[in-house]
Amino acid sequence: MAENPQRLLAAADATESVADPWRVIGDALQVAYRTGNMVTGGRFVARIVEAAEAAGHHPDIDLRYGSVHLTLTTHSAHGLTQADVDLANQIAHIADGMDIDAGGAPPARFDLAIDAVDIEAIRPFWRAVLGYRDEPAQTESDLTDPAGILPPLWFQQMDSARPQRSRMHVDLLLPHDAVQSRMAAALDAGGRLVTDTYAPAWWVLADVEGNEICLCTWQAHDEPD
Image 1 (cartoon, rainbow, N blue to C red):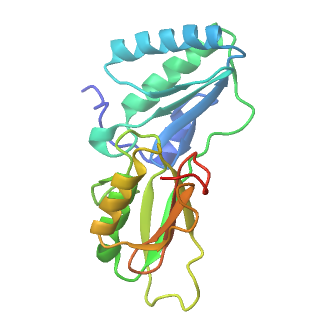
Image 2 (image 1 turned 180 degrees about the vertical axis):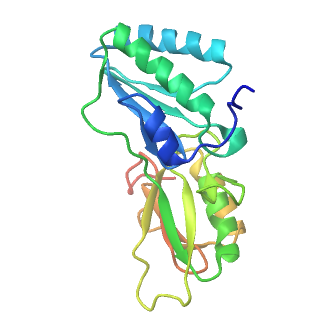
């Protein structure tokens, strides 16, 4: 019987079966290729898209001037599957054929972690202020960006509140004409305004346990809203 390509793979199994330079990062496979210029990168991406369409499985692709960054995961399975490994190996083969090397820096992912005593009390605030969505319980993250661009967020249970000021700080850069609606949603979700002294450059908000976030725009703080 043929192996189910949607069967979840352990990270160790994926690591053993995926080609260099792909690496397991959390619940995904990631890689960065150095293309040198956008023309080569565009050709490389076109070949990747062709392979992805044939496989019926698609990576997230970030095309930059001198590099291409790729992420593979099976969203329906909430993790890594054989389909991810198979397509990663195809992409590695395409890169070899085009003499495209791996990038200098290893792949990485930036996550946000928030310690909390009452997770459900602060979850609505962070979902609203970031514009995120809830993730199923079996996934690594609690909240994620629907566009897949901003970092995932997860909550860590605490037994008691910290006596000192929160040591986590987040800056979220937004279009200047979108910050007011995002701030209103965050306040409606239980947040509070800490200060608008620096507006419209940034506003400081906090959830009910005092964890802070700055909503930032390109505007200088002495300009009118």
